[in-house]
Length: 280
Ligand code: ARG
Image 1 (cartoon, rainbow, N blue to C red):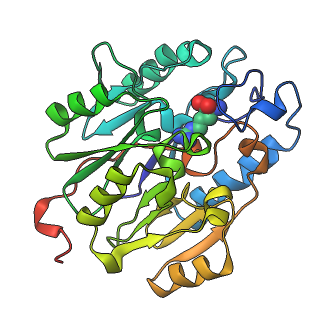
Image 2: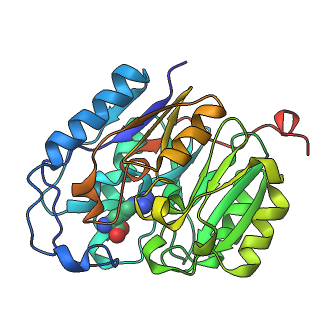
């Protein structure tokens, strides 16, 4: 079955406020190439990687709606819809909820806590494990509530570098069992937890250079990885483990602090079955 993604075209995208350090220098600037960049990105996912897209209509009052990773976390046919930390993004919540309900999901929310969906919660693809980032956007309390819902172990990971304020900017679990990580984005304790959870040969530590190019914000579809950019060294490592790597310019979205993975929400998601876990 083709993997399914929720996406939202950027015809009303722009940097209108600053809620992360990437946005600060760009408030009010125009993003003329965003539509062209997004179309090429969507074409890569659809044509090259053969993914299915569910399209959410853009809204003028919600310029960050393009970052559908923050809509929710989906687990089977349940969507745990985000509760945004910043008022600027709160009006997106009912739009995402309605889109997910239309796509056939039962929807729910966490109680009295901030939670920013698949921006901060990523299922390992082979280990029965959910990586849950917290600190800048999602709260630790959300990671505890998720543990009651997801049916697998939750690893709460404190994010400490504000440039990587969402987990999906610093971590990317792949279906081969490899996990891309920019370790300095995590607290020392979180780094220890990651090293314990991921066998040494499977942890791919990316450089600060690659992290700043948002190489961790990668969309995986079958044997294809779609991202903004990365170093030749990382590309070769990814080729060696069996991936085709497609780079496509998403610089307009970097002005708002998001990249490839942030522009998608995986709709067929959930914990990996314990039996398929990589053996150490
Ligand atoms: N401007 C958006 C924000 O600050 C960008 C979101 C990027 N999303 C992500 N999953 N990394 O919320």
